[in-house]
Image (cartoon, rainbow, N blue to C red):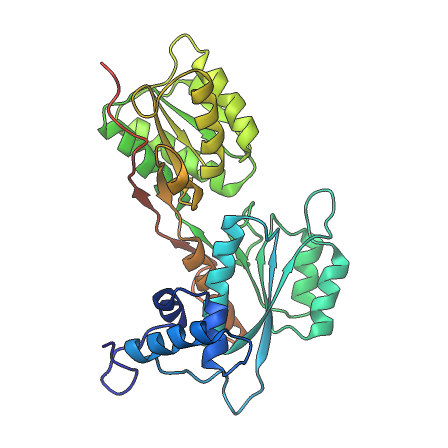
Length: 347
């Protein structure tokens, strides 16, 4: 039995833990906790049993001395496993903080991918207490607008380095690049290629910098021909892998800077009749669900997307309460998840 919160007691389980135990989503578990009727009887029974078994104690939704607050989460899109992980993290943290959450996809965008100004205007109309942005980037005029309206906001893994003073939360991308490359070096690989994301993306540059640092530390010279730009696109990554295979001395291993691009690499290798990891080892980055479904399962660097999003929400709450967190950039650790796509090179 998990001890409930109280004097001398450890904190009880979160709603996410209860949801996993009952095999349901966090919103469904929340409906049961809040007495909603739109839940199937069997589902309600499983959630109730999990609540009792784990000793869940309902936390107050809001401080009775002040009205509930609403925050906005603006995402680039809602049709990917990445956006699903971000949404889960924000949703759980918002529930624990007693906040109402409005989620919107920035479908109305300029050609550069920025949310349109009119969308930001609606934030003020709704009376949002704060905003999380999980979009490509904001323009300088949009940063200025947010400052003028005194709306606290936090960027989740921004593409470019934000202006001075803007809060952001992301993964330790440089360390992830180091970890991926060191793993391949430890297996005995020296001809290690990297397929990077867009050059202007901050996370992509950091991952490649980590790759270069690991090679330099091991005394392995970097072959300029082994660095290819895959644009975080599966089809382009497939093309880049074909180019690498056509080199006079093709790599024996490749670090792919996203799991999505790794799917394209798998396709290119299958076209050539090459086997993973017998003929070439592959390491991805993200640890999306797709990485476990591939054959063989993909060794990858896990970036904690849900935890990053939850940390961003908690940072936003502190800002809404008048605090100013130390520093403007928070990075969460990455770690290697070793599966079946890497092995020592053939001799």
